[in-house]
Length: 559
Image (cartoon, rainbow, N blue to C red):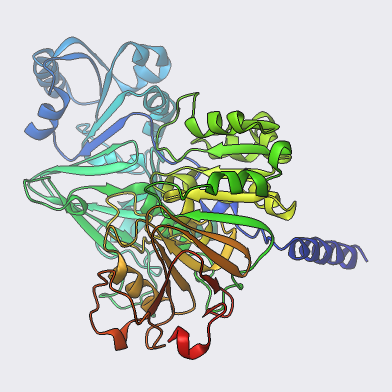
């Protein structure tokens, strides 16, 4: 009976969600909680000249604490070397540091010389250093780990066990959700690992360093130095995924003319992609219809606001009774207290105008004071920037659910540039490094989903993004691609999207559908009109998003 009652409650909750017209099915656990580290971690097999140069770029180091269990001869060499590099230096054993952890607080750099003269790989007493290291990183300091034990800074690491059998051991997770291994990272490699650890391992990113290479993590960005390279991989099923198709990337030391993605890697994006491969496929083969049952969306292509649009947004939010919240799009932990858009709302004379901002997902999920402005908000406006920031902060959180409830109450949600793309369930152009790619593995699931079944790109004609959208709808023909010019907007109610502003809005149906705008001369990259896969509409025209047709035009006119 309890089971029946419980199942009924679940179905009633789901039914209530569906009736509201905004389905909240995004999971808090589908996004990393700790998006970056506060300090810097550098690891390598051996101390090299590049590491020393990076640490002493501004002259001598202020202070270094060396933690070493090496033999006397090695300790004397360490003392001589670091006294020449730092203004203040001290050397302690790991046992001494564990006994008196506050010693570390006095130093800017902790150098863990993890190359003892003798060691047993199964002796895990060194893991007791984790609280000290974690505290220093949280304080924004640098941890330098040199030697074979640097692998233990990952969540898991591989070690040689008895009879040559590889063992998977738990590390400190200071390099979050990573695993150091050699060779292919496939699901069968650690088949004997306990189930809980195996599931956690599938959500990790593997790292392999070649000799002569150092790896640095600063914030969320990874770089290498030296003559070698670092290879990053996601776990794959060897029985279903070919070697050629599995996800892998290699970075090397930065050089003049080298593309950014060849020397810089965003660890958070890779962690997100690792989690993504454990979830249901996205986007689904049959996404929900792009229908906004209640409320209104204002989707602006950036580069300026169509005349009168903000006044329309305020009116749709309740006019003088509106309670408005501005959500900046920023990578910074803190933003200025004053915002011009909030000032303009106050000048119009709304009931309440303010803003919220956080990079702390826990705060966006459980801080009542932070969430309070959203609980009775009638309008939300998302700012411009890089849309992955909004996904990082809010996806799957309580704040996200409250944002969706604004539409349930008949309110309005708007945004420009990044604030336009984030409104779709599928998140386009969300790569944290560069923004040249319209599809970003790990972030495609990150849209806030006020409207489903579409992918939205902005600054469209001005940045010549037509081919990008063609590529996206070719990959995901179940999605309707929408490209919005600058100073142009879509106002969406139900499934009707009204175009306003000085530019055009481009609607991309799946390739081969034959839709085109016969009068288009906007500089689209495909000059063969018969092969165009879009319609370009101007101010005053409207499009039915659910049925993918122009409203008020015959099918012949649409084609």
